[in-house]
Length: 172
Picture 1: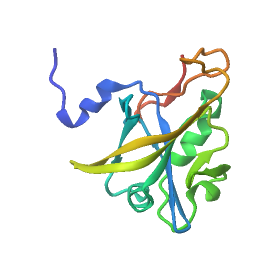
Picture 2: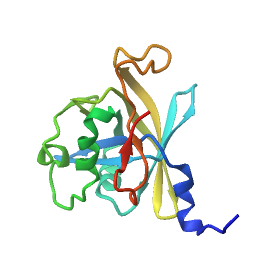
Picture 3: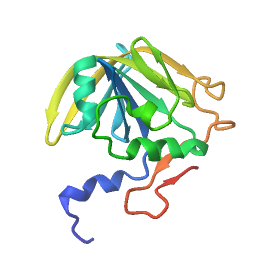
């Protein structure tokens, strides 16, 4: 078996289901694609997300203490393409990218998301070049295709195959 550059080992985890992480603070709205988001606990309900420390979304989330995690259908993968673009100006990334959203519990929720959770920031932990945000789920909603688990009748999950691929997104 050939050796693997440890700095590229994260590619072993592909494909992954990316989500859009959103936060806002003082007129600034940050959003980014994240495939490093995981459930951590049922009781209390906790999730974790790793965000690059140098990113604008990291700074906004740190100040806001509230964030949302949005699941996007494969048919809406252009939303993921838009939030993946760098945004280094002040203001509202979602609005300036033409992505419609609403505010719930002070967190931006993507209008076309098939499911979302809203989290209150419990803890931030420095981990290499990322920060790990531990969030307590305070609200959760999903489309009618979700009962106890996704039925995959109306929802086609968006899968991220990696940035080296010509076609970066797929579905099942």
